[in-house]
Length: 77
Image (cartoon, rainbow, N blue to C red; front, side, top):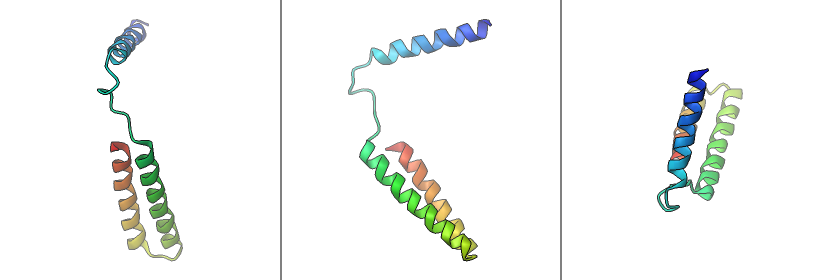
């Protein structure tokens, strides 16, 4: 039970630190860029799925890799 209470206290301390920061210091993601990258990523996944239906495994694999790279970029915007 003490680890739970310690975790709760740690969360409270972190919350206090974050609430004390000026808004310009906290980096929020750009929702438009996030949405755009998400749509492009979904497009690549859909095309990869269609490629799988036609037995184009190498193309599908490449498209899934591109989609994953876009997923990482999506989280960094």
